[in-house]
Image (tube, rainbow, N blue to C red):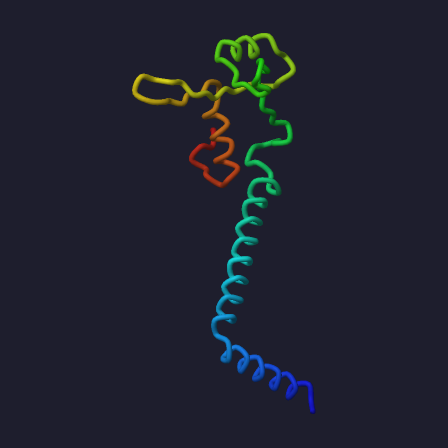
Length: 134
């Protein structure tokens, strides 16, 4: 018996077994589909978050700063403290600030610094020439 004939015989036998127990076969195929889908989703998240570099020039030089308060090891920085740090710290090339502010009718976000300049750098690097400077 040749290898091809043996393979065809095995495939026919597999289809006969699937036809004998369709519930088991459906559960098996469903489990494989869910496992493959979960693995793909997890890889996509890990690839996007951990493996690809950030879309900033020299992203390895990017740091996040927090304050340390009693009971909160990574407390958000107040805007006035940020202004003091920006004024008196000379070890950073530049500093940017993002924050949340509570309003009577909800929450609001604000940014300080040259975020739009940085955004234009990102867009130009991504191939959007509309932010290119003359």
